[in-house]
Every structure is written in structure tokens, then in C-alpha cells.
Length: 417
Image (tube, rainbow, N blue to C red; front, side, top):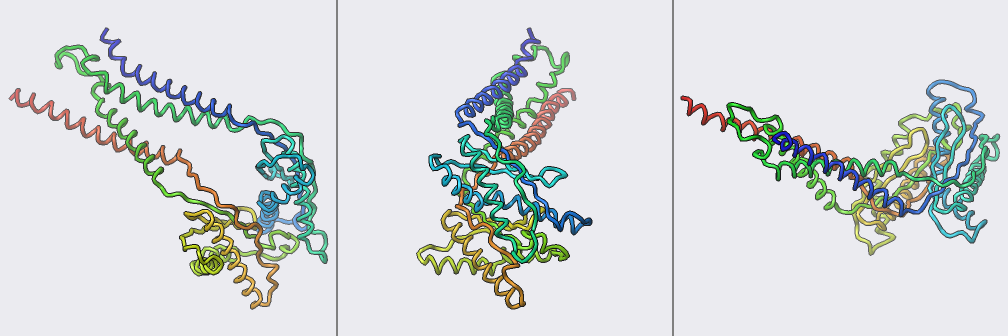
């Protein structure tokens, strides 16, 4: 009987963990079942450049990465999607408007670029992909210099495959639900075990000198501190995340023109200073102030708002992603477009003063997208909050346990003396 009583706490914790993980997983599966099925279509491009067929060294590798990276970024750009969508509705006007996601990747150790489109409409996903590939080929041909030889050989190796139904990201969602539910069940189980199961119910009423308390009973303050600390840290993180002001983000892309034409890059080394200057100029306070003045001049009724701008060059490409973050979606997008205009005016003036052709410097590949709310991933902050709270709670529980032991031993020492 005493042994059965001593197992109450572990049983309560185990049951709550299993119950929390099961319920959370079932909830995720139930939510995923209500989602609209998705369909995918796959196409391939063969991309080769005469100037990159022979070569070696770091500069050749950089040019190769820029060449393939520029193709990938162009295929995923909003402008190319817009052209493909326009062609889609022109060829199939009966199709309803739907969103199509585009994923582009370079197959390892090859010049083949794989393009995957995903949508809710099985017809649209294949027609859109064929339209995207054709529009990209037309775009590359229009971007070439008619006086030079053929820039590169980019051909459609595989047209859009028939649409296939995909299951979506249910595995990740189910695993996340099981993990979240299990952690919540563990915390709830520890609290229930130490709140409703008393030490007197677990340990037989025998003198202390005859039988020492169990390890679980002796560490109850430590375990209780860890559980309370984890719950407190989790609640603090939830309050902090929910009290944050809304943020909206808009994205634009600027491309180094030489990166679109590998023939022009042959024999010309593009230094890191050149790319760094583009980034520093776009992020400079002078450029941000000029953009704000431009917004104020074109929209005098709009009040000035703070907009944070960050620029990052996509690895292995000649494309720079310009991300603007602000508290108002309309102003954020207007500000980013004004920033692009001011940047192009400055670069054009600098190129003309140096006696260079501004068309061979930089260009706007994609203007500011409609600003969307920045939804932060809560998984890492919540996990960090729980871990930090558990550490602090464990430390406090250890101190309380040590202090409790001293208080118990002091009267016994006084009685013995």
C-alpha cells in the first residue's frame, strides 16, 4: 500500500503528459483536415553560359553563383509572377483568381534549375508554371545586348508536369502539437502532483531516525520551483509577445546589372566594396531622410513615421533585398518606393559624373510589395522563456530546500546539546 501511494505523483505526471500530447496532436490533425488541398507542378530549366563553361578559381565560382542566383531570384520575383499571372488569365479566362507559390532551386552539381509551383487549383498550377517559364525566357532575351553574341543558353528542359496533390506540412505541425502539448502536460502534471498529493500520503508514518525520506519527497521543493519557474517564464513571454505593437514589412529588390549578364562580367572582377557600397548607401541616414522628404512632398497629408530599412545580398546572386519595416502598411510601402527612387537618382548622377553608363550600374528588379504584418515565430521565444524560468525556479527551489534542511537540523542540534 505505501508503495502504491508513493507512485501517485509519477503516475499523475505521466498521465497529464500523454493526455496533453494526444489532445494537442489531435487538434492539429483536425485543423489540417479542414484545410484546402494543395497541388504541385514541377518544371526544369537548363541554364548554361558560354563564358562560364571553362574556368576555375574563386572568381569563376563567384560568377557562377551570381549567374545561377540571379536566375533563381528573377523566377521568384513578384514582377515575374505578375507577368505569368497575366498570361495565365489571358490563356484561361475561366480560371478563378488564386495564389500560386513558387519555389526555385539549383540541382546539385548541375546546371539544371528546378521550379515548383503550389496552388489550390490543379489547373492553374500547371498553366501558371508554363507561363512563368515562357515569360522568363522572353525576359532574358529582352535583357540581352543585341550587339553581343548570345548571352547564355537557357532552355526549358521540362515543361510543367501534371498537377499532383500534396499532403502539406502536416508532419511538422503534428510534431509541434505533440511537443507543445507534452510540455504543457508536464508542467500541469508537476503542479497537480505537488499540489494535491501530500507527503503524508506517500511516506509511511515512521520515525525519521528509522527511515529517511525518499528522493522524490526530499526534492519536492526543487521540482516545484522548476515547474513554477517554467510556467512563469512561459506566461511572461506570452504577455511580452502579445503586447508588442504591430509591424508591417514591405520588400523590394535591386539588382547589379552585371550580374544579369555573365558575358559582361567575364574578365571584370566585381569587388566586395562595390556590393558593400550599394548596401551602405541604401541604409544610410542621408538616403532615409531624402526618402522621407520625397514622401512628404508627394503626400503632404501623411504624417512622418519611423521606418527601419535593412538590406541583404542574397548569397550567390547579384540581387539585393531591401526590407522596410514600419507601423503602418501604406506608409511603409510608399516610403520604400521613395527610397528606391532616391537611390536610383543618386547612382545615376554618380555614374554620369564618372563618365559611365548608368544603365550598366544597378537597376530596380522589383518595386515594393504590399506591406504585410510581420508575424513572429513564437516557438523559440516561448522555449527560451520556459528554459530561463525553469533555471531561475530551480535555483530558488534549491535555496529553499537548503534553508529548509538547516531549519530542521538546528532544533535537533539544540535538543541534543
